[in-house]
Image (cartoon, rainbow, N blue to C red; front, side, top):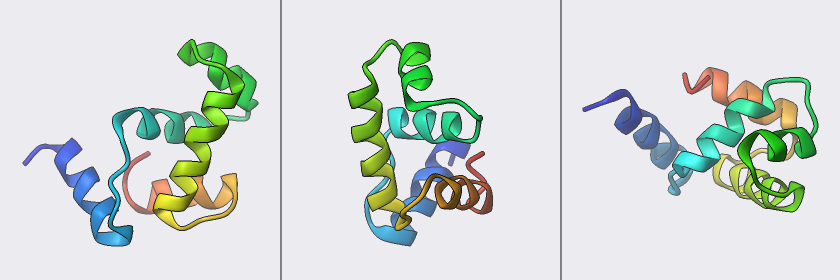
Length: 79
C-alpha cells in the first residue's frame, strides 16, 4: 500500500468520501497564507473552481474553516 493509498484510506475511514487528487493539492495549498484567487492562478483554474473544491474538502473532512482544514490535514498526516 502506497502513501497515497493510506491517505485515501484515512479520509474514507473518517467520513466515507475520499479526497480526490486535486482536492489534496488544494488542501496543501490552503496551508499557505495566500488567497483562493492565488491558488487558482497556481493551479491554472478560476477562483470559483478553487472555492468549489474547498467546499467539497470541508464537507468530506467535516470542517467549516480553512484553519480547521489545515489542522485536519496535519493531524491526518496529509500535509
